[in-house]
Each structure stands twice: as structure tokens, then as C-alpha cells.
Length: 60
Image 1 (tube, rainbow, N blue to C red):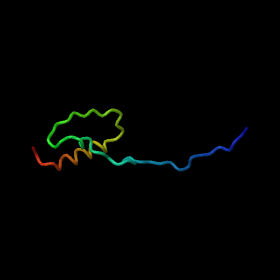
Image 2 (image 1 turned 180 degrees about the vertical axis):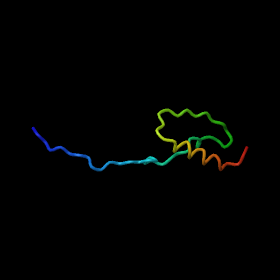
Image 3 (image 1 turned 30 degrees about the vertical axis):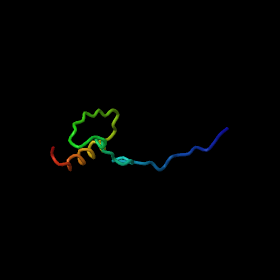
Image 4 (image 1 turned 90 degrees about the vertical axis):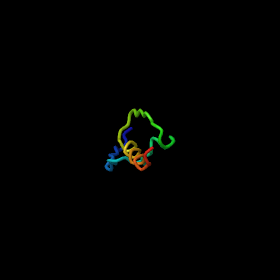
């Protein structure tokens, strides 16, 4: 049985992703050190967001 072929004309391109970034250290108390292993991370949004949030904290 033959069926018509559909061509996907519209494609989506998300250069910085389509999900919000999260802070990787949000559950740690301020001043605690963390060793974080990221596997299969396709972008650096979470890393940049974490560095941005942690740079606002006062020094310990």
C-alpha cells in the first residue's frame, strides 16, 4: 500500500538550548566546596549559570 511521503520543512535550531539553566550547587550550603562530574553535557549553560550565581556570594 502506497502512502504519501511527508517532508519535514520546518526544523528547530536551539543554539543555546530550549530548557532553562539550573544551578548545580543550589542544594549546597554557601561556602562548601563541591566536586561535580558532568557526563554527556551537550552545552555549558548549567556550568555558566552556576559560576554566575556563585560569584555573587560573599567570600567565606
